[in-house]
Structures are given as structure tokens and as C-alpha cells.
Length: 543
Image (tube, one colour):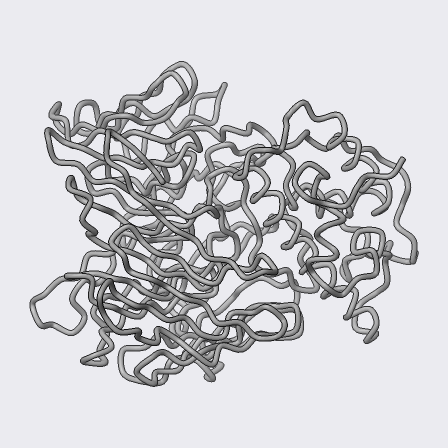
């Protein structure tokens, strides 16, 4: 139960005897149920309105081995196919019915996404270019090669210029920080901790509390919205005068719904793992969401009329600055959906995307405040997704994660991978023992830091430091939210490394020992128990 400003929202969970999620009951009584196969993967999602009959949201969901969903069939018969290569890079996402998501992906030998095409058609509609550090430098017309949008950066990843249409905007910075001073001559102001307080003088202003969270937005001096947060840092209340909007999240941090001052639902979302697949909107009518390779919604389908009623083009501005089409069927009825990149929701009152622990500004491709975890998120503490927004995501506004790692990709700039196929010194079958990494203490440790450490030391050394970090931690893991995060990160690490283990067995990758992490298991849960702290239900640490 979430109680905010005396308003209680009750969310109920149902689990199997094995601890797998079987269903959820939303505050308005809508029940969502999940059917699973023998491997525990969700194969069908059903929705039952309060007092109504069950509807199949989707069924026949299938999966790649230890990998992502390969597709499913929506309740009205629409099929969304999701094709991946052997490195689990997206090849195409396709719904062949009118208005459905239809996109193909092309990669260069280094693993950079270089083309967006019609699904199954190698002719690019949009080309993508990168600099030597893997940062997106431009989108070009696939036929003419004409630059549509272009970007340049300094050495630390701050954007120096952006070509938007026919205009080129200059970005300026002080010599002593990463704080953006102006864009195209429009000045910006900051408080002492680096939070953006004003853009264009009084045109847009922001106020923060003592923890650095934005509490108020103003335009031309007038208050446009106030904001409040729960103990997890999630924005759960927006209000102006006596008008309130309450927001509910699940245990994994997914947005579940917005509710009015009386607690009645405005919109509610339904998820398939980390993919949004359903929307209850316009008097709680069921709609289908078609997500892209990132997990961003790109199309919303009205299942009764079988037409798209909302569309956010993947071929628009790469950093998300293209507004969605809220009436693609032209019937005069706009559907407003604020979901954007994973973990983000657009807020018209502030002009920013709320992104978990901070706010993201799509027009500049950067956050409005410095990274709360400091340099652990990279040396550019305001940049988004390492300036590669079509291959990296940052659902909680703290640390970017790569959606898939091709054979030539090594992770963030500065991470050395001795086993990358492009490394001329890759002659050893044993990981180097040299080097030392100070892994953070729980709860800051993430799967990304563990994966990164594997490129710098042996897996056993990494695990030793991981165990030390856990045993030395002063934080109890009685907190369900913290434990949930540990399990989520551990499962993600195991999924990636078990896949590599299987690829090694098939002779598809150069060998490095990953069994020190996976324990030789091919079961994700067994592997994860070896990574999760003892306090959160992981294996007992033996000394």
C-alpha cells in the first residue's frame, strides 16, 4: 500500500509456490495475470477489469535461449515479431498489420547501430554515424546521405553543437565544470550542487529540496507544478492548487499508473518483464503497446478498431526530442501517453522527462542535474546513455546499461576488454590477474560494475571483492527494495554470462573463464543465488 498526502493506493501481488509472480491487482480492482511455461517465462498475459470478464492481452510469447522475447500475439490476433542475431543484437521488430511497429536494424563490424530500415529490407531509411569514441554524431537520410540531425562533443562527452533541421545550435560551458552555460545563446543557471535552476531567465525555473529533488516548476514566474517523492526517490505526487495526480510504481520501479485526487485511475500500464505491452486508458479501455528494442513504447493500438492511436517514431530525433503523434488515425481524439525512453515520462509542466533519480532534457540530450552517484556513472555526469541513446538505456537516471553487446563492443569508453576480437594483443586464454578494482558496497553495487570488473581482472578476483563488499557492508538487506535490485542485477549478469558460456561451448567465442561467476550453472536462478548477498537470500558465504 502506498499512502501519499492521505491518499492510499493498494497494489496486491500473487505468487506461485516457487516465488514467481502470478498476478497483480491494481488499485481500481483490475487484475492482471501471468501464465508461464516450464522454464518460468511468461507466455500469456490476461487482464480482468473489476467486475468484468478476462481479456487476453497477449499470448504465445516465445523466447530465445537465455535471451529476450522473440515475439507474441496480441489478443486481437496482431503479431509482434522480435528478431535477434546470435549476439542478441536486434535485427527487426515487425507487426505487419497497418500502423504496426515495423523497423529493421543494421550494424557495422564494430557493433555500432548504423542503419534503421524497414523490417526485412536492407536499404536504410536512416543512417547513423559515430565518432571514434562511439558517440552518435548524426542521423542521415538513408537514400541521399543528407544530414538530418548532427552532434559534436568535447573530450568528456559534453555536447558542443547540434544541427537540428537547418539550424546549428552552439553549446557553451565554463572552464571549471560540466554545467551547460547556454544553448544557442539562451543562458542557464545552477545552484551550488549543479541543479539547473533556470533556462532563459524566468522563462523556465526549477526549485529543489535539500536532497536535490525537483519540487517545483515555473514558467514566466508562475508555478506550473509541484512535486513530491516517496522514500525510494520515486515521484509519486504532482499537484497544482487542489488538483493532484498520484503515481504508482511496482517493486521493480516500473510505472503502473496515474490516479486523480480521488484515487480513480487516469492511465495504467501493464508489463511483460521490462517491456510495456498494455495500457488502460480512456475509461480504462485496454490498448496494446508495441515496444522497441530499448523497451520504449513506439505504437499504441486500439484493439477494437485495430488501428494505431499513438505513435512515437523510432526514426525521429535520436535523443527523444521528437514529439509523438497523438492522433495517427486522424479521428480527432488524441491519446496522451507520456512514456518515453525506459524509465522516463514526459512532464509538460516542466518540459523535462522525469527519469527516476533526476530529470532528462530531450532537447539537449542531457540531464538537468549531475549524476547522484558521481563519477561511477562516467566522467560526463550530465550526459545521457554515453551519447548513444539507441543502444544504451538509463531507467533510473543513475547508470547507463547497454541493451546488447555485439562481438566488437567493449562497453563504456575507458573500459579495456582484453578479449575483444579487435584487440591485437588478445593471445591469452587466461584473464590477467593484475589490476585492482574497489567495488562499491551494497546497495550501490550493480551488475554493471561486476561485468566491468571482469574485463579488468579474473572472475574469481572480482567475486572475491564482491564477497568482501557484501561482508563489509554496513547496510542490512532487510529492505525489500534493495534486495529486489540485487536479484534483478544478478539475474541480468547471469543471463549475459550464461549465454557467453553456451557460446563458448559451441565454439563461437574466444574462451575466458566465466564459470567463476556462473558456477557452471545454466539455470539463471542458481547462478544468481551465488551473486546475491546472504542477507537477501543468496548462497551462504563460506570462509
